[in-house]
Every structure is written in C-alpha cells, then in structure tokens.
Amino acid sequence: MTVGSQVKTCFSSIKSVEASLQMLAEKTYEQNSYQAFKDAEAIITEVKNDLQRQVIMLSKEEPQYN
Image (tube, rainbow, N blue to C red; front, side, top):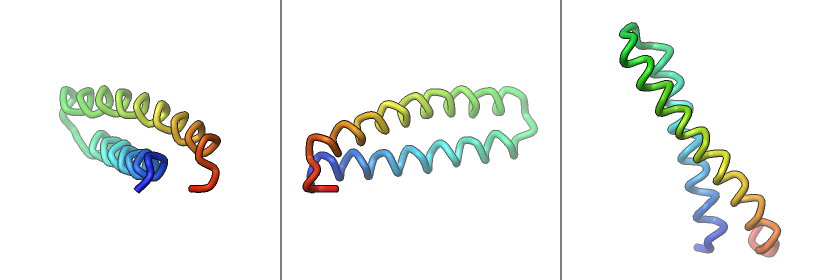
C-alpha cells in the first residue's frame, strides 16, 4: 500500500468520525456532552482539512497511484 493510499484511507476514516460526532451532538440532551462532541468535531474537522490537503499534494506527487 502506498503512502498516498494510506493517507486516503485515513482521510475516509476521519470523515466517518466527523459524521459520527455530528450525529452524537445532535442526539444528546446534556449540554456538557453536546459541547464535548462539538469541540471534538472541531478538532477532527481541522485534521480532516489537513489530510485533504495532503491527499491533493500526494496525488500530484504520485499521479500513477490515483
């Protein structure tokens, strides 16, 4: 497995985690839990955005693996 494909797999996983945190925040009625989910979601969104930039960069460096 190439580095590019590993980063893409990680990116997909992070997107799934982000969606799960959004869903959990929407379903909770407890304010502290809601805030914890939203804070975690914000961090995960930053990580997801960084990984997305890496995916783009790697696809330019490793075009044969796209």
